[in-house]
Length: 440
Image (cartoon, rainbow, N blue to C red; front, side):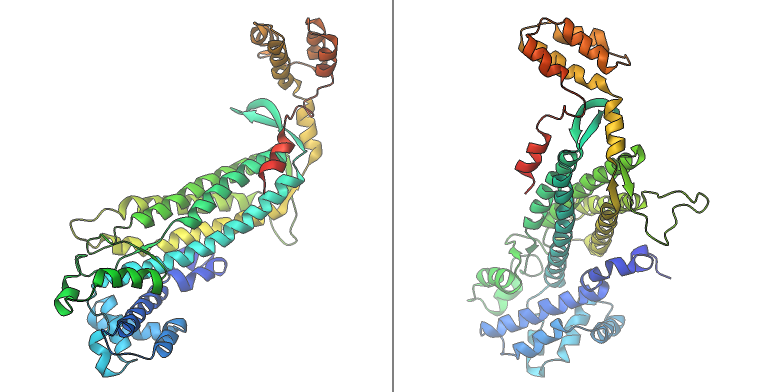
């Protein structure tokens, strides 16, 4: 009866995200922040010391029983963060009850909890990007010398190699993933309107600014934001989501290109025993993995863009719109992860068809006219482009016609001989060298 397919049809494929982005994951992260703050206050001799090892074990081993206990309290309080505070009271001596959630607004707990969740998701997706990159890099090197007819505007164009075209996506994704991995995840811990007013009223001589930075950076491992309202402004979250959105665009482009190459016959797909391609056409092996990946990347990108647009906007010192929005981080990461897994499956099933690639090249000798006109330019022929345009544009040329054209030029014999040895299959420039140099 789940509303989202991530929690039903695709649950098995994305279940590693459940402990991070589920409601239970959020409660676990909140519990960790509350515990670390209580321990921190004791370490700084502001609050009584507590058994840090015992308390940290609660967060480390946070269970469904703990989650249900918090939700039961929330049903009475109608406040999710307060429920965590009351839950923790049962885990510590009464003398430290007043120090749980000390000086905090709920958003101090929420913003850091979500940041911890995002950091976990960031690490997980970075690992998954690595799997795709390794596959793309391997295919790029394997196919670096396999000639292929290129198409610009859908029309025949200067040949390339399949490996070099895969390398383009390898390079794009590598840059995107590298930036994604390095985006900082921010946190604030400064009270109801970001100015430590409550803290100072209780302990006016304590350097709360310094302690806030130390807590965020040393205890939680996040990047400290010193100037905020009640909420951390979510600019870092928007940056992370926008980078995922950009990654989605790159991967959609890859899926569509491979889908097209399968349609042209450049790729076949491994037949998996038991799979059905069509309910009515028995012969079909459809490129469904790339279609599934594309659809999931579209969903992830769309939700990510919406969240990135809306999260940094808050009325005055805060409104509650971000609370609903942030609960959908799991949808972004879930659909993105599902897309990556579908892409990996599709890439595994690809089988190159060299015969189809060679046939396409053989049937497109007109692509050599670029080489001919460029060599003519290099030898001072000012109207070289116009000559070749008149000769070739809109024509169904044969290789023999091109060779005849070359013979009629005033180029030196050795240059003519070099041009006449050129074929669409060998006219691939530095494709292989580009792969060797830049796919690392």
